[in-house]
Length: 377
Ligand SMILES: *Cc1c(COP(=O)(O)O)cnc(C)c1O
Image 1 (cartoon, helix red, strand yellow):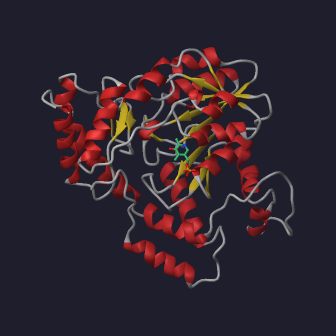
Image 2 (cartoon, helix red, strand yellow; image 1 turned 45 degrees about the horizontal axis):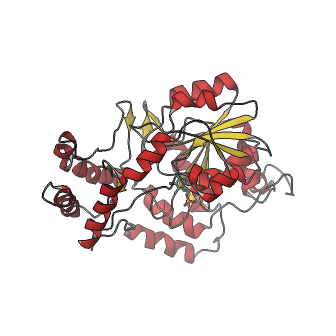
Image 3 (spheres, rainbow, N blue to C red; image 1 turned 135 degrees about the vertical axis):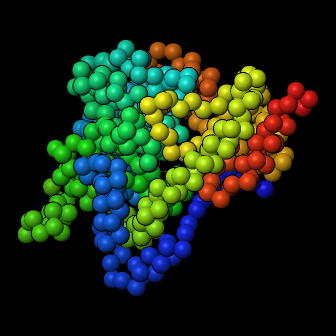
């Protein structure tokens, strides 16, 4: 049996968790949380990093920080996870879905301007599979129209665009450390903030609307309720586990990229023969190997491949039902223009198992794919 995902955890996780269990600081913002914050700020080059209990929580915080209000609109792709849209809808604002590019499956930057109305406040980009959106064009559009850019970088830690780490380009970004992502803590996330003007408010929103973070730094003599907020900070138990992964994040990413490349080589000939399409990584982008997917010629062939792999004990899976056609998407959002690429690509995509330690299993999966798609099959 080859599962689709198998979370990796190292010996240092146990060591750090032992340290937390023997300490008197179990709640948030202790030693391990601070180590994680410093690492994210230094390695990703962001002004401020704040751990959250999930990527969804980081997106919710970003939507508050963007000042979204009822009636506002946010432009985003439909080919993404529900959390990207929920953050907008929870503010009473409307997600406006734009089609994706056929090559990267990311929001098509050429369609963004046509979706802008007097109510548009922000653009939420999603770096699908850890492959960057066309950030220079998107940042230029946002600047021309006075819009905030939020990067949903849930899948994109350690990936970059024109030499800049993803998450360091928009005003804000969200990372996820869910066990299905590259760097994990079971559940977990972080908000990354590049606009210095909103850092203080972010600390307040994350601490139940209080200025307790400034109090903990000794900047004020007592703390109180000053703004809206909730409890977005993770405990030291989560942060200790996360630190054991961040310490070796570069190495884990390299190992993942090796697995990704091994798949990519396997399918080169089949792509040339027109049997399938492999992922496209633009030249100015460095990916983090988050997902290895294949695009089949049509939905029936895709579903047939998933069934054939399952019969061999291999778990391969499709991805998002586009949000614009999901029940909540129909209720809370609207599409701007044609969603043709989104509808078409989402029906033809299959993700192959990819996890640290899969190694020779790549050859097993690739051979099974080749058998299933061979003309004789
Ligand atoms: C995983 C993911 C999220 C949500 O992250 P959680 O940590 O599970 O809340 C949001 N957006 C995208 C694109 C994701 O892949």
